[in-house]
Image (cartoon, rainbow, N blue to C red; front, side, top):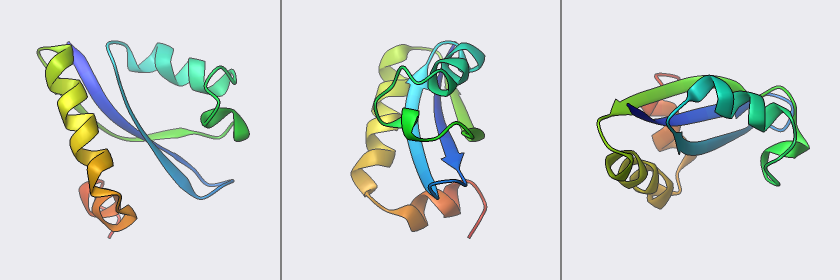
Length: 81
């Protein structure tokens, strides 16, 4: 099983979109400061995820969300707007 996920940091008021096969491990990785983008905050929270049978599908969905380049789209997706 693979996942496309969205994280949110209240500290920097930003969202992060990614994909993984293990959300818990990936979240720990984000909190540890390994990723250059997410190391600027340590309060990332999982706010949304979708599951897929293949990594290819998860990557396609991640790219679809990122191509929107829209905070409003993400907030509608997670039910915040």
